[in-house]
Length: 386
Image (tube, rainbow, N blue to C red; front, side, top):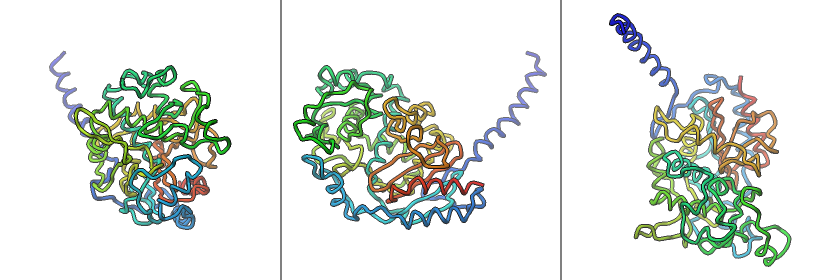
């Protein structure tokens, strides 16, 4: 190449590359222990509508008991053998944040209080699977589990057909006992008796969606075998520390969910608080996790989790278009009124939600909201976009 042309190209790169860096730096990411607030007007939001949303959350506190031991036992009282097997903490009062372009447009309640999140934990668990997929530790979500977990967990004609895909979208119909808990005893039908539930006909993996914490915990156990280290450590090192989360969050399993791994006793953590346990976390850290997804898995120039995994995780699944890989979608029958259907969200018992809108760079976190007003709550926020 002509030396003169090389010089011209070099000059162009010199001036253009800093500009590209500057564009990348325009996105705001809150530093650890900090979070900048801006008025709704500065963020292109109608202040009256945002105030109305906050008041809606405060006026519609979930009716679940403050003593979550009572709430858990009462909420799942129709399940045979149901009992508390993990830590439980009394819940706080309503709290939440509305994040636009990374900035806090509104907040309410005690944002630093660590609370149970119940099945919001499943979206964190899905993310740990995604981290393994990104690294090639899970070669394909269509791989059978027997290729990764060779103990008796996936023995039998039925269980041996189960893949990561089936476990992640809750269509595996895994059958068995896991850490003393029977799969059929988790959220059984309201009709029938124990013999009917125990002797049910198994569905072909991938054909039928069924929300079931025992099977979610089988996924957690399987990921423990892949990572070969406690999943809370994986989440902390790979996600929560890089995004500047606090040190106050915890991820618990059940009292009996301990196993031996490479000569060490390790707890297999739960995907929710069905029997206690799961992730205990404050609202600020939930919002950071949501913002990571709103930014396609990138945090301040570091790709934490791939956009390809997020696309997989929030795609509507075959047996239930409203559900992906432990994230909920608006692609099925869910109707939130005048709200775009590209939103996706994590949801947990008692009114815990993380709602993500990548296209509009919006994250909404709410704790202890009455689920019957969730659609109205989100719709009111979207009515504020000017």
